[in-house]
Amino acid sequence: MALLVAKFGGTSVGTIERIKNAASKVAEEGRRGHKVVVVVSAMAGATDQLLGYCRSVTPHPNPREIDAIAATGEQVSAGLMALALEQRGLNARSWQGWQMPLLTDNDHTKARILEINTKTMKARLEQGEVAVLAGFQGLGEDGSITTLGRGGSDTSAVALAAALGADRCDIYTDVDGVYTADPRIVENATKLSKISYEEMLELAALGAKVLQTRSVEMAMRYRMPIQVLSTFANEFGSDLLGTLVTDEDETMENNPVTGIAHSLGEARITLADVSDKPGVAAAIFGALAQAGINVGTIVQTGSKNGQTADLSFTVPQSDLERAEQALHDEQAVVGFQHLLTDKSVAKISLVGLGMRTRPGVAALMFKTLAEKGVNIQSIETSEINISVLVAAEYLELALRALHKAFGLDKE
Ligand code: ASP
Ligand code: MG
Image (cartoon, rainbow, N blue to C red; front, top):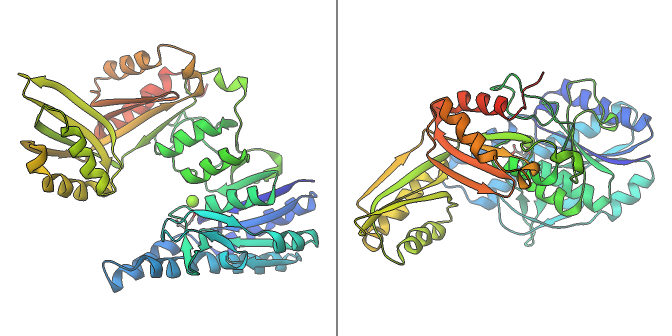
């Protein structure tokens, strides 16, 4: 008998019918002898609607009130799920973040979990009660309601699984696992039966949308296995049919590349004719850091006549305007001549543990792109990933070609 945390995402609880379907999965796991703790997201679209309400009152809503409002989405779905479970004859109750309590810091709209008090929940579990936790929300240090950032219910689920010492955290969603690439673009993408925490973390951070990045970080820290599986197939977590995110093992290094992520969410900024002298890069990136903007892939092109150089880097598209502003404010100090921006860029990233030991991954990647006439704008690498920036119009062509070249196409 295992203790499982089952998390249902927004589409899995998007309608009353779907909530009933999710409840039937929980009941079935119970019949198989497992104890199940449920974590739910808000019904699909609910959080967007609530945030829309906030913005229609004022363009700059107070983050404390944003959280008070946004957290209600999960309150509704947790209550409905508890009702649906009771309807199936189970003894269930809903829990809100403050009722546990699930304590967080006060960083509204992106709070971090500090501690989860599971004492009462554990005692009730022992008595056969099914707990349904409202995901995404917590109780801040000053007593206000907080939320954990968009997609944060994944993090609630993994954190609760770790705090309860669960055997596994099953994430029920609208896809049946983690794929070698986005199957909507690459028809030959295949489902992975297993992937390491490290690889999943890179894929999530580089654009794969299956799991919130922070939830994977947390799973890795606590060595909590996660299974991603579909709510809409006839699947149960205890059948292990989805993708298991777990510790690495030898078989995981068979292929140099495990999966390919992509992101259209970045923009490129080029500062032309920056004076080539010490302190300039510090001034540029200092200004961006001051503005709280994360910078990726920095490329500096060689000095022209020893006087000036061009510097380009990426920022999240959502931060582009603020980045431009911050740089213009510093123009006198930095001394660049022109600031150019490009939003139509795509980042493509190969991820795999096998890369650590196999040479030639970068070479094959660049050759494949060259053969398709795709120009590489910049390159970034870590121990287990290689990312390139290309013009967005080449995204699909490049993804399919790389998927094939690295032997990931299904037979
Ligand atoms: N409801 C929240 C959101 O839409 C949290 C979640 O679904 O994980 O971001
Ligand atoms: Mg989600």
